Image (tube, rainbow, N blue to C red; front, side, top):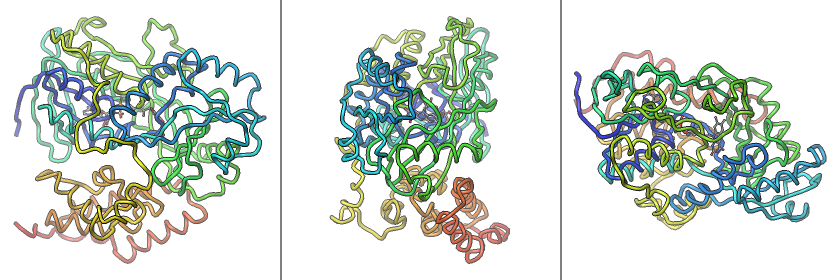
Length: 531
Ligand SMILES: Cc1cc2nc3c(=O)[nH]c(=O)nc-3n(C[C@H](O)[C@H](O)[C@H](O)COP(=O)(O)OP(=O)(O)OC[C@H]3O[C@@H](n4cnc5c(N)ncnc54)[C@H](O)[C@@H]3O)c2cc1C
């Protein structure tokens, strides 16, 4: 069946940029429809390092990005504190790092407006006892960690409250061109195959690393380079502050405490594909050995999970950096007005940047859309906190435990690692209404299965509750359960030694042997219980 409807602006991509853009459009009185081919934040925004940048990382080589980061760091703290943990950040130099770098870095921070506080090695080690004693310089900066799932959901909920809408599991298959204008798109439901047509006065392409593919659907060429980075989550918070190496940006020089884990990363590897999520063995050893320089012993700790994300790197031809690759390419962003660049109205592309700068990227892209549509409203997204039932304060690591202990989270625990209760799980399932929901969607909603056992103990409980609520046990349910377990295992595979190998073997015994997951998938379909 092909249904059709009409909106003011079709936003392609349910990552941080698309979600922030949909919210901005709705606040300026335009009617946006956000479409995401999978679930919200399944692209780069769900595969990132988790750092709300102070900008310190870019203070020497990329001042523009550094200045954008510190401004947007303050804005996100104001409008979405619930998605941010105010961990603070440290930049640490060791005798292995270039001796002249701290001075150059301090000068860059001053120019970009990044506040720094010089502290002694002893103060740094009092704050973070796991740090190396070999510290030659240490500075505090206002880094934080940011839960992209919470941030993106809040942008989308606020968009809906303002009359916009979002469709997940819908892919833009084609952009519809009439002469020199893009006037809409053909969408496909990626779960049912159902098609629909949307006409739109403008399409905002916020498809991250796939932005070139989406522009290609209108016959346009956006030359994007791809750069892959791997990250590793350790099973505890080795540090409670973000720790950066005070040296020119390189592999494995950041440790980010996020939720119950500590994320180490990242690498920078050229790739030709936007969805190349490979992790090579050298990346794992490099990340662990570099982190070990600042936190001795960490490489012998228990590594929980590894994943990779792909950075879309774009420099406009006028920048004249055609040969730049990887870390040489600036991390700022570009808004491409295809009416100006290619003579094609109705399409605007926004690409590059950081999750920290997603709101600013959205603002500048929506400015171009608004100009094309004759909308003169100003951007107001930097001012008010995001509406919704969010706490008006920073996220606290102990928040869920506090609620459990004070009876504010009733019901039995389903995921012990991340403290997810049955009541939370049922409420999250109910929020999907008649729409299908997979365990992996619930993982992103609640952090289900993201702790040390990597869903070893909660998957079968959650699958049972999902089956009770949705009332069917067809092969699609079993297949989705299998896919969830496989996806969790995939992230563990590059890290199989020590305790994690034991955990993986235990999980295999639970799922493949005791529950017979592989055989279940081969059994004939059961009729839906309430058919
Ligand atoms: C390894 C790594 C580490 C990083 N660490 C940090 C960090 O610590 N801090 C920070 O601030 N930034 C970090 N970044 C950068 C940050 O992750 C990105 O800037 C940000 O997530 C980009 O968001 P986005 O919305 O532009 O793209 P994405 O999140 O990739 O969203 C694009 C979306 O478009 C969807 N899509 C694509 N094609 C279609 C289609 N045809 N139809 C419908 N939907 C489609 C995709 O499924 C995807 O969800 C990191 C990036 C990488 C790769």
